[in-house]
Length: 582
Image (cartoon, rainbow, N blue to C red; front, side):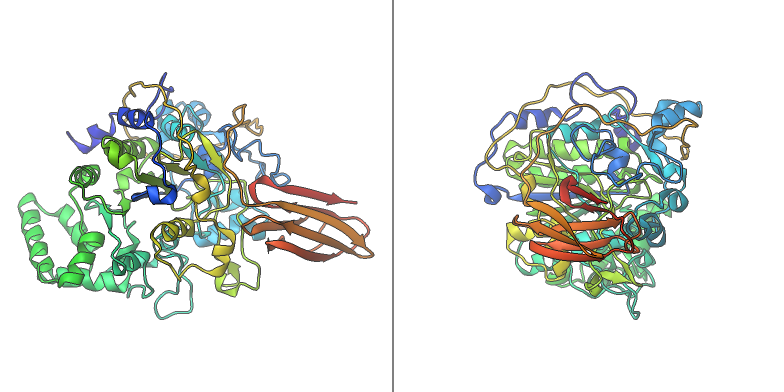
């Protein structure tokens, strides 16, 4: 069966199936009670980080989350330079395109510079000038039913942010290592994709979390095909570059990226010769090098990612930590993939796990996205106070970036919950730390202060419902990428009616204001167990840009008032908002 025909087994656009789009094996597994034991009940964590989607782009209309009907939204946030969020499907209709074309929207600017421009010094109102009017397009349940069913069946995180105001590489570095250091030989923090020039980039020198797992004897593995879309950040580090070059000595090449690019262009006969030469080079690696090569650099043939993952499950070889790195076609990136193609891969991965009930009973899958691509999200991200200089590049905060869709799939996250604790990509490592005991010193104190460790998304006491079954229909054929445009008559879209059960939060925020002469004194309180990030917005120009404060306990903020009137909003985690005016 060809790779393309495999992807067309599911439809994830057009109409919604009458029942479920999840694999039958998942439904059978959901019928069983969750395994007791808390975190110790988990034996496998699978991490699937996809490409370039914002939370509002996918889930702005989903009921019961912080979406387009958010009562705590910033003033005027849903009208960006005269453009409001608009349906991609309706844009296709206006352009006389079939509804299936919405699977193939084009990619937008997602550079560091563009991200800073959209963030607009904290006002979050520069989206259209920075990204174009297409930034405001969104999907709904009819467009991406598989993604919606995952959210309805498991636990969706609506305050999970990417880590950087920028592109793929630095965001993935946070997921793989907990930090971004400096570009080699410079004083510039890593906020771009310089490492993609794998033949010439010197490589990063700080330690990855995978290496820490290796040193502690915790099993791990990266699953990837010949085409990994340069999404395996381990390949950009000196240690792994050295191993790759040693393995590639028989071919005279400097990077795995170059080898596989050449392999795709070679004739079938030449391909086999090249693969044998690679095998010969790999055979020269010592034991430690070979272990890192097999876990981080080895790749399987095109279309065999899910097959390789399933084979390890069936053979009882699934490691404790698995990193899944899809091909470009399955990555969900707007320039190379689609929600439908990615959903087919996710379906196959879920089926591989759930087809073995014993493995399902002790596995958690973290499904997230590296960054937002350039598509609008209305929730401004937490950023560090100015004193946290290690969190700045060129005088600007490195991150957080905007919210990205994140769903936790496991026996302990069943029930269609929303988790609104603040997370970023370091939260994945923090979860692994709690679970394995392997510490990651790269994560900054500020990130640990603001970002939780994902454990609040889990309920180790109860198991959830069993959904209904149905059979999905075919996926639409690919079309050239296109960019949607807004309608002439606009209005803010509405979310689906209804609520959603929510996971407990570690915050207990409150704010009081008292005027003392020409000063407004804010008392910020949080008697929870996790620091709460507050952003203070000066709508009467009391100061130049929003202020950011992290609070655990009590903190006083004094605001000099330029006149007798003031208009201050204080925003906190999980939709907390207080307004003070005179």
